[in-house]
View (spheres, rainbow, N blue to C red):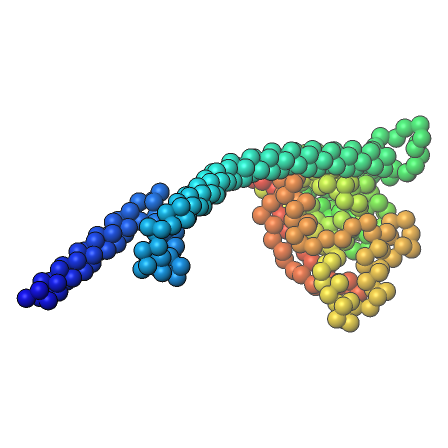
Length: 337
């Protein structure tokens, strides 16, 4: 009977200890869910698993070494405080990084804005310098005669040779063939600097004996390349455009830059032919070339002076040693009834 009582007491004590341990574990687990207690509870669980702590607990060593336990708890508390300080430092760093990045981004934006302004200012200054340079060169080359360049060029006196033909064309359909040379064209009033056979008017191509809006068509074959770009853009093309009636036609034949270069590269155009077509034969004063064109570049020039609806009639067309293209454009506006 006494044996059974003792066993019952032992089982009761064991069961109570088990319940206590379970309650402790639940308490520790529940405390671990609290953010501030999570780390210290983890440290305590880790410390409890140490062999020395296990032996001390099993042997009742904590009753004899309470001072050691106090020091242990104090150390654990110190470690927890240090860990919390580290966490606070990390949080402060994380909060400060976006602020610093925003400041850096703001400084970069300001610097970029200043650089863009400086680049725009530099581009504007370069553009103005180039504009002034072109203006000066144009005035030196084509400006009004002054003390320094009097007699630099001999003007051709305008003279109508075939008066009847010109008057008839004025009454019907005035079509000009500028710079005809030795190749006058039927149905056109042929104009050249020289009184060659078939020439109807001797005149400079920029001093024709007609008023603005009086001409139905301006045609030229291998004339435009004899004039520099700025003279064409500023003087000749605007002048010819003014002579045309609204809806009038401008037609030109010039060397085809693309076709000539491609021919030279593939061996179908000889070097001497390329050189002569590009720079002119250079056998007399009027045999020098100052310009070359593509259909696109000529179309752009014509559009600047109001000659639009450009149509390329031919490209790469052989004409002796030259490969040429032909382009036609129309002056804006409706033809007169």
